[in-house]
Every structure is written in C-alpha cells, then in structure tokens.
Image (cartoon, rainbow, N blue to C red; front, side, top):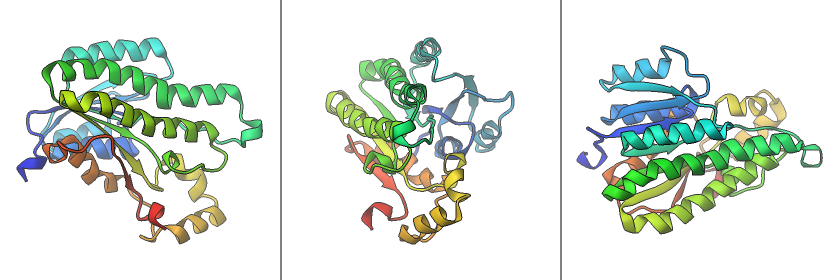
Length: 250
C-alpha cells in the first residue's frame, strides 16, 4: 500500500468546492496529502475543508474565477511559489444549446474555462515540478473526450482538447519525471448532469446503456485519482482513464 501513500505531499485541486472535485480532494487527503482547494465560490468554511481536516490533513482555500485570465495567471504564480507535488485540474463549466444556435460568447466561456485556463495554470505549476524532476498532473476529461454529445459543442471541443493536451504534455514532460494523465468520468450525479437526470426519457436511455446500471457517484472517482497521483502510476503517462461504469465498452 506504500505505492498509494501520499504522506507529505501537497495537492492542488481546482473545482474543489463540491461534486467530483470535493471527492477528489478528500480522497487525496485520506491518502495523506495536504490540500489547496480552488473554486470560484469557495465559502469561508467549506464542507470540503472540514472533510479534509477530518482526515487529518491541512486544507487551504483559494477563490479564482477561471474565466478571468489575469486571475488565473495570479493564482498560477502563487501556486508555483508553493511548489505542489500534485495538480488536479478538475474545474469546468458546461453550456447546453443546439449547435446551430449556440452563442459564441458561451463557446468562448466554455473553451476559456475548460481548456485555456487549464493550460495556463498547468504551465505555472509544472515549472517547479520540472525543475525538481517529479510531479503528478491530472486533468478531468469526459466521455465527450471520446464522443460528440448532443447540444454541447463547446464542452465537447474543450474536453476533446483536454485529451489532446494530456498527451502533448506527457510527451514533453514524462522524460523529466512529471506524469500527466486524465480521468474521464462517466455519467456522474452532479450539478452538471442535473438536466439529464431531470429528463425522464433521457435519463432512462442513458441508464439503459450503462452496464453498471446506475449513475456514478463522485466517490467513484476516488481510487483513480489516488492512483494517478501516487507512485503507483510512475510509469503511466498520457492516459485518459474512463471511470464510466462500462459506458464506452458498450
């Protein structure tokens, strides 16, 4: 089990306030890591912070609007000074609108938050990792890194971009001791999928295709997160790992 031990490590998790990001942060803390949680709307005493400290690790919260380039660059500089061992790029947004009517400002917002800000933040945090020759970077991809989706062209483009970015960074940074990988969650019961779950016909059609027969829970991402952030994945680079109840195998 020492392969999965993160004692003494410092992890940054974006989108950590709730849902998948919160579950990832707590899983890393339970494996021994201290956590810096980032969110646009992180309250003074967030639930994720209480869960991290209950696991015996320290928690620091940072507010950042990932649609604000200046704010992202400022956060990146601050985090680079802390030289974290782990960066989990989980924050993201989704806008649903048919492609023919999809507003360009919504497209720009989704690409900016889900892809451009991720690259800018990763650039900054990776520099001290590359200097010391070690580090773990994990992106949150999506099933739509593999598929096209419906009514979410910006989201699909951004998550397909994340898959490509994961491979591109792995090609450059694996020789320098930094592992870059991604997790592609399946249909997880979070705010992002509420519109699907609230549509009886759409929800039923999705569940019929998932071999596991249920919507995923944020906690289902815990094991994959710890694996990709630990020594257990030292020879794993450029992988987009589905955690989807078997969806892509159907």
